Length: 285
Image (cartoon, rainbow, N blue to C red; front, side, top):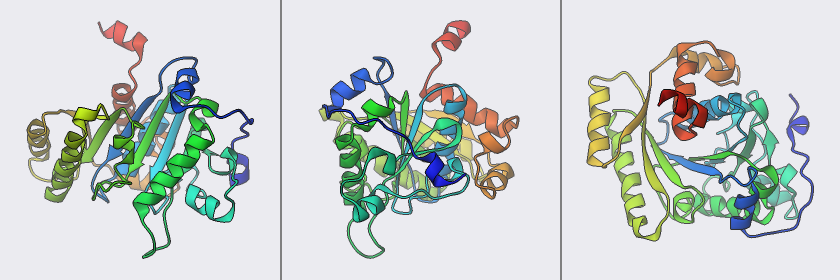
């Protein structure tokens, strides 16, 4: 699908404080805002995009914000196309509109890419701050009224800019995507430490660890042990599957490309943890 057809037609509205916007959004219901962190290459974008797709299939209004200079978080939601990033748009036009930086993806998902500076020039963390400020200036949450916002954040080094989703109240919760590999668990501990630094300020809380399995020995036990050390829990285990590569090779998520597969069912189940269905909860009780 052409990117022009994916641009949101957003009516102009007056500016307001973020708190007022969130109160109005979702017919008065609070927006669930979750930031996903993890070591680079751990499959974070794959996990987040499949969760977005699963949430959208349930009828929720979903917004996914990619916070990586590569600006490729949402490409499996837009048929493999990389959408223009906020930073790229602002370089060309400081007076950009919301429809210039928000694109409609699979099942109506609002797709945003923060972007970053040219390689070797500038600060990628600062780029995230700039992108978030522009979304706020344009009253993005108020106008789009998402039920849930997923931030896909590069988490190897949690500098000031990359920590913005957890530091400034943008996300209510942080989920760490990890495998049982040593460096992935090391990154998980660093991310949890960053959250601890902000615990007294009422910022985002650690929701738990999503295990994106790499089929290494004793992986479940290793990740569970790390969760215990971090005083949290493993909220979901995603098995390794060739369907992920098969779907991504055609620019889609597993949820879209193989909706009846066991792998898609795993993402669907995990989506209920991050946005519980009241009716389902009552049925279980």
